[in-house]
Amino acid sequence: MKFLLAMGLLLALAWGVTLWKAGRHEAQARSTYPPLGSFVTVNGVRVHYLQQGQGPDVVLIHGASGNLRDFSFDLMDRLSDRYRVTAFDRPGLGYSDRLDRDGATIFEQADLLADAAMALGIENPVVLGHSYGGAVALAWATRHRDGPAALVLLAAASHPWDTPLSTYYKVLSHPLGQRLAVPALTAWVPDHVVTDTIDSIFAPQDSPEGYAEYIGAGLTLQRSALRENALQRASILDEITRMLPDYATLDLPVEILHGTADTTVWLSIHSEPLAQQIEGANLVRMEGVGHSPHHAEPRTVTNAIDRAAIRAGLR
Image (cartoon, rainbow, N blue to C red; front, side, top):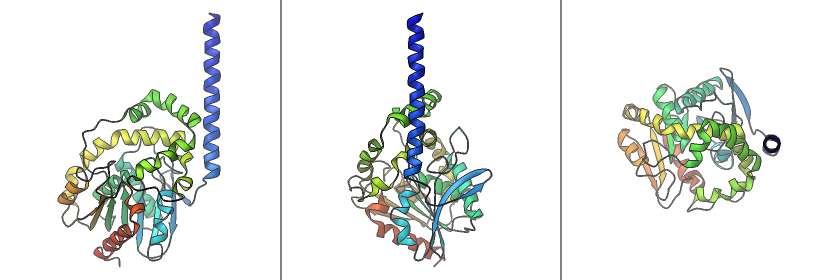
């Protein structure tokens, strides 16, 4: 009995230390990487956004595990001389609130960002989505036909795939993993573990100089962000499958850009069939480019945004 009591006390102490370290890690991340922009509250949900420039509206939606810093690092500055550019933190990531504890679907995220855009006076924007954010952009266009004036999709997840959900996401999206594994990761995983994996995301390109220090790895390791990202990742396959029949009904300019060397979201599985389903869609195959076209070839991406705006009659 004494042994069991001692073990219980040790476990309680270890868990208390874990929760303390998790909170300390989060506080340090928020101190080092404070919000870059402002907040708009929609239906009780606070959404973080960064806006700069003047002109026709362009909205930027980031991918999984990320935040709007992915766009403010470089792309926004390339556009703000001729557009009003707004980048959002998706729900539960960066500094935007979670919608609920079940994980926001791509449809719920699209509705929230559409309402946030409306609250900011953004009407008929060019909506750009990268990776997971591309699925949210597609959901926005299919659910709000009078919303986006055009879409620009970068390495967008758009079609079903047959590889199983990784063990990492299976664990973190499970109720027990949400309670136990997530706080442990926040507490004990140092930021450099995240930054050390960045090059694999950019491969075969190198990550831009200064990107790893800028992106805010500690924000990704927040408990709320880990929980939300895992739930979103676990449910996106079913959500995309539900959205497939809607692609053929889209009637707006669509620019699709995808690297031929992307092994995270495959060109042949996603963008190639998507381009065939959307009438008038323009597919740009970016030779030798990996999963981050806007960093690998930013001019190709800004040219696509310009084409989309011209096609939509915004410029």
